Image 1 (cartoon, rainbow, N blue to C red):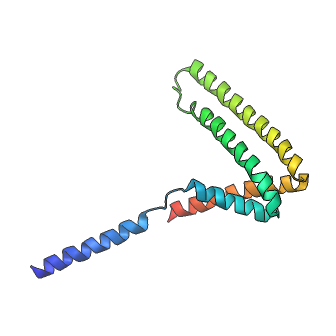
Image 2: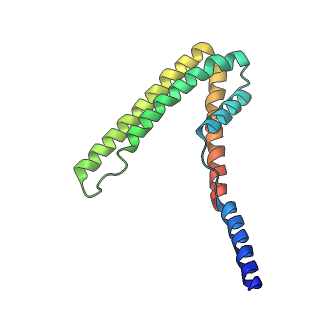
Image 3: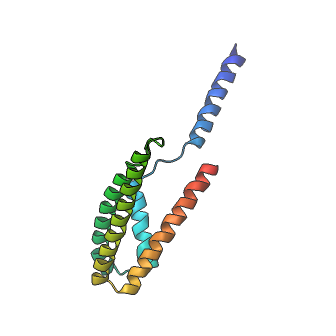
Length: 144
């Protein structure tokens, strides 16, 4: 009887340990944003003054991009047997992509009003590298 009870306790402890190891940490948008801003600041060598004028504009652009990205996503689930609906979805996605690029152009110009063009280009490159790095990190976590 005691052996059966001991076995159950050990099995319970092992199962909770294994279950705890398989859990991935949840995505934290605030941490992601803070890490991104720190990475950009470091790679573009932004001074505290430059960062304090740049990042409010950058966050504003990102919020507007999220809205466009969400609107683009609405057309992802379309009846593939309905050519008219597919054509409309393609047109709407293309329009959202064009709006996204126009928004980027507008904000890149704003960025260049507060920072030298070389730093803006460094920021654009750093942002791209950060996203690629985070994507690779997420893929590697999934492989574990």
